Image (cartoon, rainbow, N blue to C red; front, side):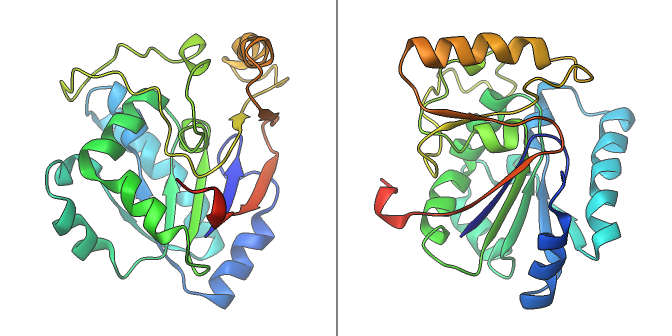
Amino acid sequence: MELYLSSYRLGNRQNELKEWIINNNNRILVIPNALDVFEDSERKMSGIIDKCKDLEQLGFKIEILDLRKYFGKREQMREDIKKYNAFYVLGGNVFVLRRAMKLSGFDEYLKEISKMPNYLYLGFSAGICVLAEDLHGMDLVDDVNVDPYNMGEFLWEGVGLIDYMPVPHYDTPSHPESHLMYDVVSYLEKNNLPYKTLKDGEVLIEKIDIDKIK
């Protein structure tokens, strides 16, 4: 699997996404569940649609995948999404997103397909932080107690596709959470946890090391 890890929205390596379309196909599932921290509303949907337009301008054909539809229905999810090999995971609250991935089984699905080269995971902000092994430190930015699904369980363990914490919005004064990212970095350094910082506009592209997947 190829990981396209952006600090905010699509970032500055969009030509590589155009190449993905040429070499693969243009179908992509947009996963907005990090925004379940907010109640469903026209404003929330408008924001999701606005971020989808970034992909449409590159030539992607979009469908939205709401993981809530598949809570407790893992096999149905696998059947419904098997024709897709690209995912765009939006920002929001990383702990809410982690819960949604756990309850739907999407986290385990990602681990399975991560061993296949013809898959793309594209995400920004919470959508990339959730891939780390350990989510400690992100509670300095996102409220870990928000539980819209009444799961009743803290999930500090990330999906584990990467062995460091990507720290988005770092040194980006225009972003309202940027100042909090300095605290995140201080925490990670104090606890000897690996990390990589990204300013808004910056993108990391990674190939999954299947030997590191637990």
